[in-house]
Image 1: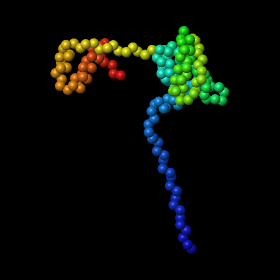
Image 2: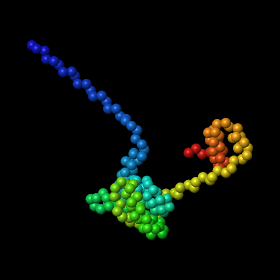
Image 3: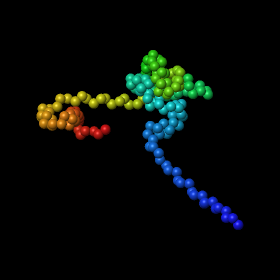
Image 4: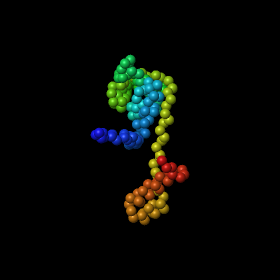
Length: 175
């Protein structure tokens, strides 16, 4: 009888290696918050994230987007609803074309065709903190000790540190 060659036993597949490149947080936040934004009519979180760029810092303190609604069966030519406080609503009408253009540029397509403005109290983000005060002149004793340092880069760094400490109200805050 001829010998029949035996097939080798199947080897188990190597385990899949998990990993790859690390994803930036910005990519993950959009996925996590996506469902919450869709619930309130936002399919794109970029409108909320970059609202200050769209309307500018002055208007951003007094208004915010609340809803982006599209016509049935479409994903463009939508109506952006904006909540505005006080007498800002008429002022927003004057810059409506610029707001639509900037929103569409950030979203990447003609998502917004018109704006609906609701007057009333909108929950606004806290205004940005004021800029730190300008450093004052250094005392003569500090300037005289800095003159003795030969390395100009080190001298400039120590001088900026001394100026920052001269305007602070305590130990430096690490940011």
